[in-house]
Length: 372
Image (cartoon, rainbow, N blue to C red; front, side, top):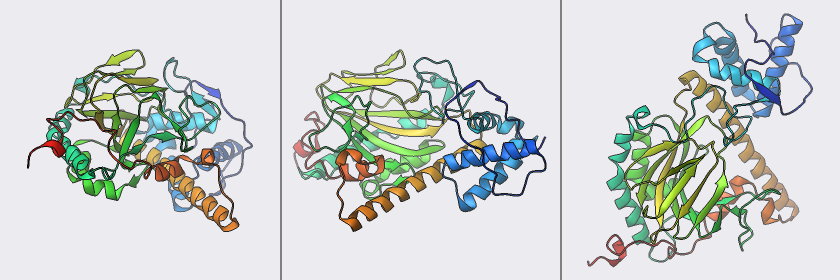
């Protein structure tokens, strides 16, 4: 067959009802194909795919997903696309996993992945020493001026948020007590050049030791006494890799119903799509390096297709934010900080920390207390 059946190939549930529109490509040869390709156009609209990317996505679907050759190497992407073309979401039956349109059917799921599934973790752990040294040097160079590059973690405010409203009014915090600060190296296909310049060994480790990055890598720091509220990641198509750096004593992470007590220098993989939360009851600021990777069950063609859709949506989202900000500035209209989008919050939060006094390090590790 040259077109996919619009009947569900994976169990799903309606999440939306939309009018079908004719595709902008060559006209289908029969009414059934016309319905299929109209449904495809809706999915491309949903992901804000335009121009050459849209033409390329249509060709990929025709050649790799509809074609006989796509039955195996694009099987999961095909199931996902069928669900979205029918306005459905995969019903995975996992009580603590997020229910999201981005979830891909049929991917294996573990709260914490078995070590034997990722022999490459040994190469990640081999980088621990140089990353720790680089991190502590950055703290020492801050000199009370907040130059280490960390910023408060913030999410956009919403009517159902469970975070804490900060005094500065920018988004919501992910903790109900304590402080959660982050230092972004890569975020949604954006490279933080100034942070990367401070951490060349870390950036090199990310590029060399981690397979199939999801373009999301950062340091996460949690002060003593902090509690990160339970939440889910956006989908199951990525996994989260942790390399614990320092300050792990007294820290625990819950993923689904699994409790993890990480150790410094021991990397592990967990599924970010499951509900998770964290507590830090130690006396030193806990720091981990987080790198997201594509799910290993996805084939290279599937990663290419899904990654293209994701890039188009992110690019369009940033463009819309910039255009709205420019229009408001032109009209002299101010915005409520609580209306800020995720992209705006990340940029504005970069300048909120004026020192590194929140970063508690044992004296023997603190480069600012060592004799010269």
